[in-house]
Image (tube, rainbow, N blue to C red; front, top):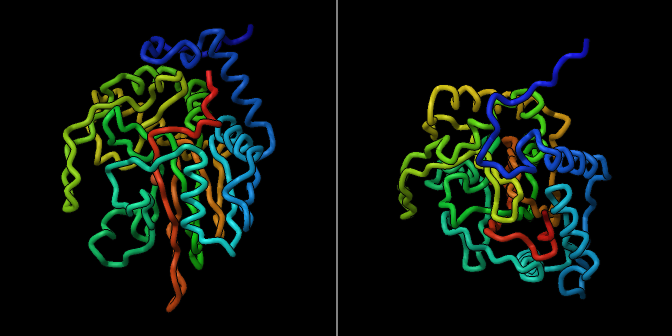
Length: 307
Ligand SMILES: [Fe+2]
């Protein structure tokens, strides 16, 4: 006798039908996402001297990569001013860096490098330490929800500093397969509380209640996540256990991990996927790893024709 398929104890009522793990709309969505995943990985779109940004066809391709795979890659020729060219590309994509919660320059971009023992180094992105799985801005207010970010490499590390990506859509598919009952707990609108915090740079936020899994207004999946559970209060014991289960699945589902090492001139534009960064070492007496980062509450116009 065949075994009955595992079903959730309760449907995740806070997620739309196509993300609920059981409906025909879900099956169609899942099959479509898995088909996209079986397609070739994105390549680098080149930005050449004499061209103001990317060709129109490449802008469309970049939007399609972002929509279908969750990330897109580009490469700026080393004869071009990298920062200016990146700003031009972002303007071409209709993206304006508008995340208020971070240290950034007038053009909206932050320069990530190892600050050694300086005051900024207590923020892991500004150190050479391992940056564990997270989505950006998981503590942001709902109206400041981040949709995508860009990382552009000016200088790679001597060793380490690789990026790893995991698309929450693929993770959700895996979670329904392994622990479907967890999805209801983790999509409750107040399943986690990120306690109030104030830093010396004047950034301040109140207690923030959030769902780990939710949907954006356009119906696409949103995720708020950090591995650092000491920064989180859970709604109840079951939710804490579901989070632990999720943490294990994130580490375990290596088939969906995308590993990237950006070289000088290479950049990634990424939906707000789960990501982590390995620790790194800089060369002695030479410029160390330098990455320009921008974070956006919008998606590029070319990536927006989602369900
Ligand atoms: Fe990040």
